[in-house]
Image (tube, rainbow, N blue to C red; front, side, top):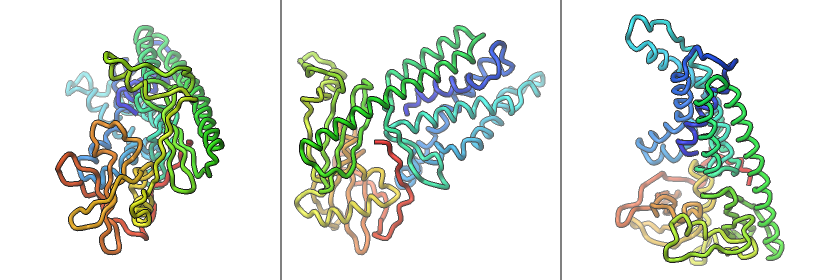
Length: 373
């Protein structure tokens, strides 16, 4: 979930845990700061990306997004805020205790984690004990409606500070109602997928519905079949006529035009393992899928064969990263070496691929996914 939304959710969470309306013993400024800290803390996993690509990919949306570790993180931040509140002045000594900061930080953090579980990317709330990824696939990472509701809640709360607790709780209630509305949209998208599969007489292995940008009515539908094919489309759930694209159409308008009415949807069909050497590609993909990086193999489809550093390789592309600014972000290279596979991430232009890890057929799958698709 985008950091701007999580910061606002953190503030709303910190306000909602107040016992009463009226004057705040912690002070409005400090409570807002505590909420923002709780809301932004999970994004510290960006530091993992600065260490090594292996560690960064394996621990993205994991430990810093863990509900199990949330009380510990809140405690550490509470002590930091206590030190900051002292300000080095004798008169500030003992003015605010860590106990006053602990609950606002914790509530802001927990609210963010719970709503983040409803995104298509999801989080690992039980890391590091159990590396299962929970994905509700209801909310897009930068949902404009959710952003608007959060902004409205924070602005109203700052305007009517005497009723900030009730305003925050009402905002959370409205956000939950919005999530329920999105759930009905998800059911509709899943029904579209099943209808399409029935008409095409497809043997369904799994149906995936993914929220998309710009509108909660935009959905990506992926039907995975038993013969290792992926049927992919972008739809607007209630649109009747296709959007017209002109020379002066904005980038947002062009993106929106990709989402077609249900009866005019363009279904793209992908053979996951291709036709060149499907057995070779399938062997590499299965090892990839059952590794710590298996999340990125979920919608990966065959792109071509190549030789890299003298090794036979198959390139795979994650459908979710179509249109990404960097082509390398969703591209992976699986190269056979001895009794294992070398996994690389896509390169930028003429640079080398980024080495991720060497994987083996016997490697366990530490990171599973509980996806509500």
